[in-house]
Length: 160
Length: 286
Image 1 (spheres, one colour):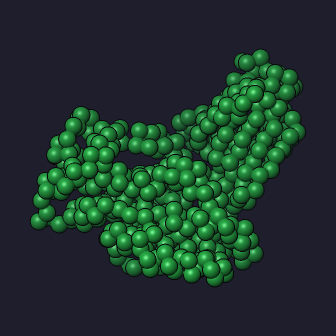
Image 2 (cartoon, rainbow over the protein chains, first blue to last red; image 1 turned 180 degrees about the vertical axis):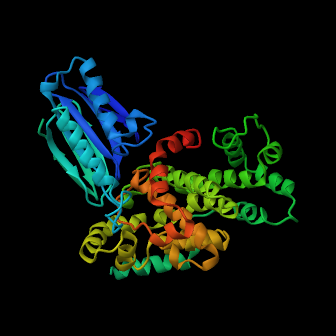
Image 3 (spheres, each protein chain N blue to C red; image 1 turned 120 degrees about the vertical axis):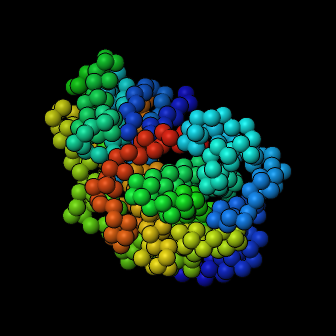
């Protein structure tokens, strides 16, 4: 069966099933991939920032996008106890000072993502985060595995 | 250093025929915008001879980003309705697309990625210049953003063959990707890009944007502000992953550019937060 590639843009949350692959490209943003191994349904949230004073759009921020993604999955009949998460991204600008909020966007995204997933009791089974690389991630919904391509190297994460 | 690659690139930039081409009319339009003696109608007549470019220009004139809400059906109307400077930007978009809208394999950019990146940088740079009330800069940063990475299209083939060496050099010496390009291949994409712009007879300020967009403090004083704005717009788009390739975030965000433009770090974060809206505006230009 051939797979259908679905692009997930910056600040988008998308669900998919069986023969679909959710793809997104990450710099300092974090991609959160949640999979229900029972239903074989998954979703991807591409968040730009951890949070903001004026949150104009839920999909942009980890603090709102992750609960939104979980709720969308629950509405599809998924159950929390069968959900696991993989996260990727959160890179930083090379040699930019890491002691200011701007220099820390990647790390702030990762930290908030971990915090929200912990609060929602969704375990992170794999992560490929930080560093200075851009990442293209493909989330395969037939088996929930994640392929991460960074700096010309591909890695696959199979745990679900 | 891969000597044979350097020699090959020496040849390419000496024998200009192997660099991408641009119709003469484009540099004419860019240069004439600041020349009060130029008769734009004669230029419009010249552009009209190329039906493909004209059709593309008219399509852009009616896109959400450029349109002023009035349907535009001819170049003459476009000039009256949108003004000469908007038309210049539109012509640059329409004509550079054929050079920039393709896959750039060595940098791991799929078809359309580089084009999307360039448009995003152009639009963001213009927005920053206008927000900061830097009118003169706003006139050139859009074009500068469009062409800042043109050198990548020439270097791609050679980067494909040396990518591992470049990346190892980056990690070993802790230098940015473009510095490593220069060390490994003898040239980086800024140096090659400048040669492309010289071939196209684009003005010096644009050549400086291409040559110094990773090191704004080294640009000639008169153009440092323009270069700095494009530099910051580029950094924001890279952080947001817009058209980011194998060179990833291995580039520096210049403190000099931040000070020169007077943009605070929280403002940069706010521009970054609004990248999705920027991409939305871009939709029917792509």
